Image (cartoon, rainbow, N blue to C red; front, side):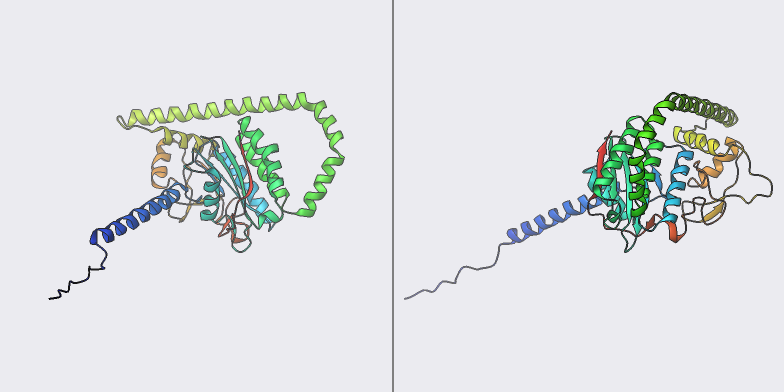
Length: 340
């Protein structure tokens, strides 16, 4: 008698299915974690202006000067929109980080891709001029490298951070008009020998003036800090047990440096946006005790920077025509990297 047996089942064992699902879940988790980590390290875009100094190497006055220069450049041309960032360390590749920041901030105008982001990493001593594809029509990679070598790197090696950013921003915007830039280059080459001779003749005077200015500035800042410390000590005596953190102390130093005198009577108070984006009048605080509650309520406004006298902004670029952040993109790797 012939006995028939059932063929072996062709179903995939459950453990294989479960293993595949577990593997896919693990891969998805790794990818999601990597994306989340990259997103987490991108700092928030500045609430106002085009400078974010996370490394705290710039004074409030320095930031204001850089913002004003960027504002003028944005108003005077359609080819470049610049922004500045300082950080204290980056996880992963530095150039990947600068491209991601420039893209997520939307540096430049949408459709024109004319953004330029200048970044300094104080921890790893890295520098980067990140140039979007549209801006590369007037600011080539070779030109960005020259600006890096002539201005940004030397300034950071000398610890003249604000001056390095200002000269770099100047040079970047000089490229915004190709014809003017070419003419300026020709003029500089033609007059090079004369300029060199003049500079050699007045080098001693320039050095003396610079050193005198630095000494005066340091004495001035020392007086401001001493006065601020006395105000803070008085506040602590009147409020025993209440500690003032170093961060709050530094913010008050900056505020007092930029707001030394009360506004003239009848003058419209300056305005600024708070952390929620609401435009508010900026009240003058004559002492630490009057400043502290304002800072705790609106840290974005009373952190020390100068402010505009109207809703349009003090630097002239808060409007859409001159803003550095307009949804730009096209950051595919153009620009130049350096170190100090």
